[in-house]
Length: 299
Image (cartoon, rainbow, N blue to C red; front, side):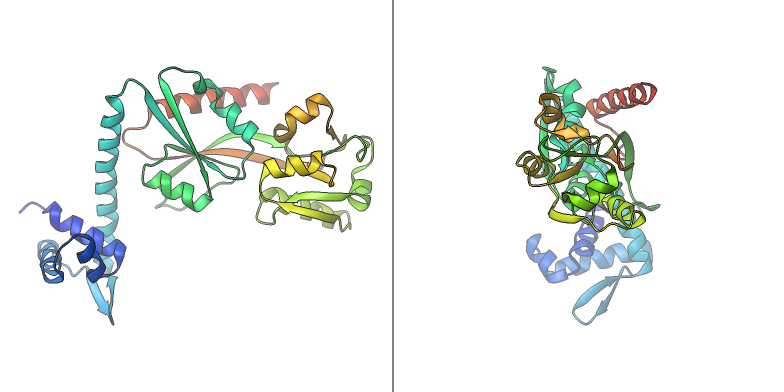
């Protein structure tokens, strides 16, 4: 007897909700009707899928296996619909999610190959890592830009593409920063604008200060690169940033860069999902980004 996918969808909905009553209300079904559908699926598979503990439903081992397969089945269906809908349009949509704190200059540089294409519509959204990765899994975005790798395990469907790696610099106004001043002296004498403690750049900076036996004065901790650039321009302190963040200010002399680098690097990533029907614009963009990265390494 073939598998009844209506039964599987009902099971899938209850498994994600964890509550039979809530799922029945959402699907506009009676609890008894929903229970019957799941019971029939259990009989077809030959295993109980749920066990009740108090008022909560918990997946059995067989239930977890069934849920993994149901997730893959229904994600593939959503992907098929999304892909074929896009195929019928004269302009292809590229939905990009970017970490809210990521450098805008870097984002523009990465997206530049498609921004002027008349056949591509770029939809750019920002958010937290959790929001962006959830959007990737639900196919609401095609690609996510981050400066950290997402958690990975054997079940994680993400593909991580390393786009670029840049040395982080210390920058400040010409009034505050003499580029020839030694790094340790800057750490001892100047106030600093730093990324927040959850960033890899900040972790490396704290380790550097520890090795040099210095306790820098921290005037601001910022998780937004645009705000860090503004604070540096306002002469609040010296900022620890990748040069791409302040490239315009360095070019016009409003900010200057210390000659001695802290030997800290920031890496930029594009995160995609393993898909049966990948967005061709994403593939082209990643190829262009890989080519630029190779040219930078050879330069």
